[in-house]
Image (cartoon, rainbow, N blue to C red; front, side, top):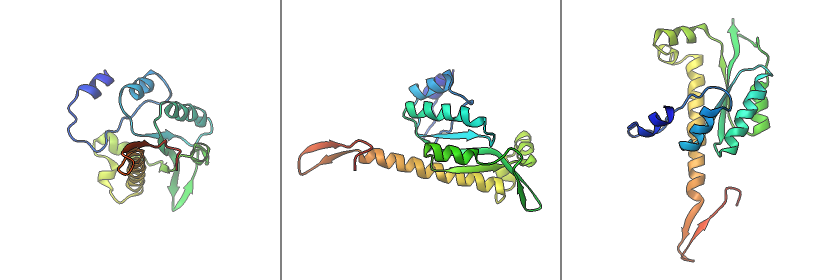
Length: 177
């Protein structure tokens, strides 16, 4: 059904269509990546060390399917009390992912009870508090994704060019200078 909805709906002119997939490397992810052109993936994790194992599988699956991972979001990274950050689930897992897999962006999302309440109330926290910490984090993520997808598109457009002098088409692999 998801594939049918994606391929038969008239989405109009879109800059981005964001798909929120369930965690893991199951049939849904494989089917979507093989049937719909996906520009990039944002990997979502939590600070726990055990989450690294599942995330690593997902990143490898996306790499195998030629879907680059452009950012890591670490949910529930910390909470703040009186200006002091507390890390109840530990630290370093998101950074370990970006370092291990060369993913260029890490956005750490705070634990905020208002975020859940706002979602349940139907008015997103970024609308209620557009200058708050959560809105800043989402903005940071959005900018990072737009920049990385732009780089990917530029790289693709530069990979095939027509050389006027030689009257031929030149195809460059992504690894060539």
